[in-house]
Image (cartoon, rainbow, N blue to C red; front, side):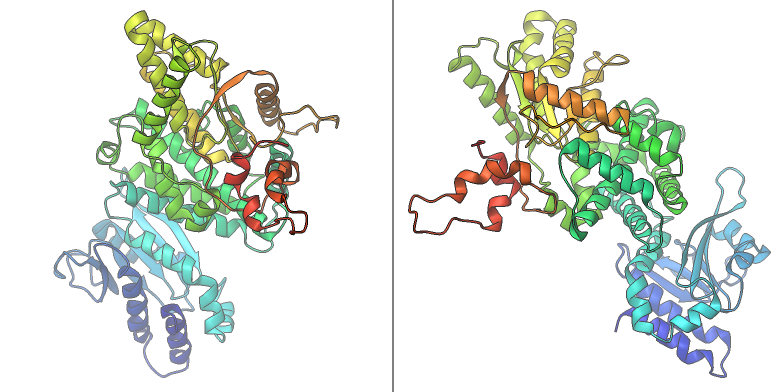
Length: 547
């Protein structure tokens, strides 16, 4: 029996008993302690902690490293009867007094929870995150008749909500801390999108447009879940990336703004997606609320400590994998997202450069203007950035810093290309390249873009006789057309990178089937032709030659 099921059972049992309302305290304490045990340092709930100047709260949340005679470091709990109105309690004088003294209060009537914090500027109470097990008391008592069913519906989401509340006053300074909070909000957003009855017509439109642009289909239930997960992680990682760019310009002070600063992403197709989201017609308003909570969390990050973890400009690239692991480990496996050590990337780039010089007799190697380079599954852009750095170092001694930097910028626009089918790493690749060019004092001008395209690298290389589908979103249309131009008219000489280690088959692959056709034949006509699922794996298709 789960701890939430036990909690619900206890409430149902005590409902008709002739005992005071405070008898629920122990059940709530047990629930909170079970959640707090998963944190480091562990958080413990104490009933009626010592009065430190604002009265005696119902429960206090202490981390394991502090004495119980101090203020509870993680705030206090104000609990009222199930029949009471949650928001009336939260907006009352008693909670305001607690918040002024303790910093935050989690207010509950045992089936609804709301966090109240103190505004840093005014000191006044602020209503923040809320979680409801049921819409009202009658609905709760009816649902609690089946405690196991109710617990299964809310176990994961309520646990994460309570963990976020307990971590609200804790420092956010390490990549692990920030990855967890970002991923927790992303999971909450995905859950709200998937709530039965939510109108997702606009979201369906985005899916259809992406299918047409990328030449893939999200056909079945697994693929639909895959699509929504990738879209949600794109939204939240785009938010994180915009925050990183904002930090580059405001390293010491200021406050990151959700819509203002995300609109400054210089990636047209992603800016188009954010524009669609910000209109309020694509996502439920409850998801926009979660984005605002996430923005608040990013504004609480101890930025000096967080960015000190990464090399200059590397936070966007190297934070993606821990975020995806925290958000959805299974999705990470399906996407084949695995960290490639920079030493491996640099070695491969140097080896290609040497081969160009010694075997193809191209003296400048990767720096030669005639050498066209493609990473067909560029992910977060590690190989592209390494190629650009290599070009810069090759030209710097001979031409000087300024000319070498301009050559790098021109190469990234005209002959160094990356393809990526997933929007989130596509965003990261653009930002990595943009930050590198800024570091070299050769930023892209208005109207210019890096040669990284949101496209399916496994199709579209040959002109089709079918009429091209016109897309509703102009930037997505431009993205597809530009990628097709690279595929069909650029003399690609170098292909390098790290293909996805993934067997995910939720996307239709009819146009790509020829890539593994050679593996489906046998020299002995009496043997059956191989048709194993492994032949559909992405790394097989990326390593094959069209028949």
